[in-house]
Length: 257
Length: 368
Image (cartoon, rainbow over all chains, first blue to last red; front, side, top):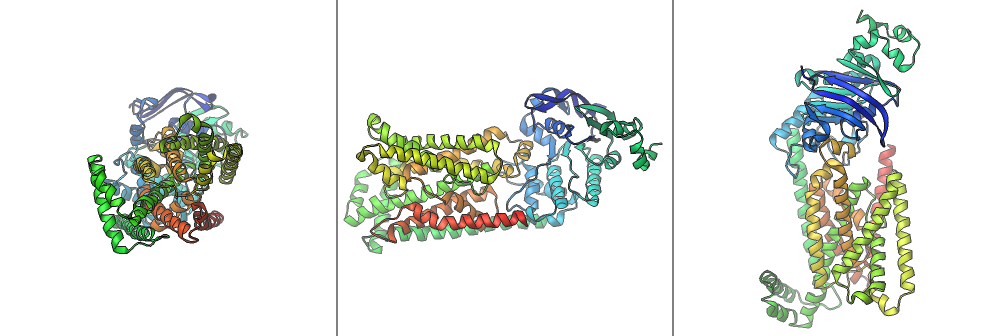
């Protein structure tokens, strides 16, 4: 099957200085890919580059066969949605209004919502189990609720690929699990391709179809969770003593043995 | 649950209409008060019939391109009272309304740009920059250009606005904090004022008489030429702002999200800042620097609307700013008549407490 999301020899970095180069990823439609690695290794840099928040240094990124940098902004917006780490502080906006922003690439020049748009907003809120928050002021929500609304906004954009930068940060375990379940459902039912970064390795291994290890200015491993665990990639990635990951998370390994 | 979103939407739209009707009613009251008050009292009935005739011929004259100028002239020159109404009070009132609206929209655009509710053309030093360049033009260039048309002054003010905005922007890229941005704006404003004062000190008296009056900020110099210039600049500016309301709403979620929704962020920011500068330059050129309207009015409007949807807030701010400036100008010219207050005195008196209140409320929100 043809890969929906693909990078070829991609190099990323800031201000023209390469941080990580030769990134080659191929991901089929409806699969979940998670980037793991130590802080500051460059997970965010990669995600920002493939979402065009940051200029690439070299190489190419393909979304559904189109080169990212040759796509019109509007067309890209209709194919890709994001959940960023930057915290938004909209004044006097209800959750429904924040979610409805996801309709931006589809509405007319004054942003008028049609019936279909309203249905999409409603469906997205239902999908993240936040219908009861629709009329509430966004600023009054807890972190967990805000993150769900931001996810609903992205879903409402009807993306074929969804990119999330540490979507589970600041959330307690209940919301972390809930969020990952919603993502799995999206991948399964809507065939959405999902690329994200996570800090929690245990959750990443459970939730993803593929794992990329980003460490020390290079991609150290790319494969299924099983491959990554078996090859001791995680211990290498975080510079842990051989066997220490096995010692602390034996259950994760027993799944594959 | 579909009803919830629906009712909410109708709710905010209904509220918008209610607020606009309320502001329109205040607008009518402000018109009546402004036309009726002054050192010469004119009978109500006379005013009504004068206005009716004046509007009729003024409209016909404008539409036909000057065919009715004789009739219009005879209505205006009919009596001292009619001259006062048509040549002094009416243009002054319209100027206050248009410029008040423009200033509010300009402030609103700056607040969007800096993502900061305290931003405004006056606090960021933009008005002072406009004043500086206009001052230099009046003192040093007037002898070469001859008489200065209002368009020349608007252009000079625009140059000054863009200059200061540019300086503030350069600093703003390095400092992200809101208070630092304001400090920079205020300091740049002081430097511009110092340069202006310096120029005034060394200029010949007859060059600076106008400048001194103008730099205090007042609508007293209003004539129909000013009104025409204001309408020509501000109405298109206002419409452009309205056309930007969709990207503005997305921009309120932050630059990253705006970009991900298909906005070309860089050109959008350039348009935003140029439009805001143009509007505030127009105000500064025609009425001098006016404080606090740009901050206070958008805030009042948002609070009235209980929404920050740009498509509602932009027209709301324009109308609210028009009413605010008309009433402030009324107070400025009648409270201690025949002595006239500068418009800045009045707007600061009402605007500054609102700004203080906003700062405290936001602080509480951030801590709580």
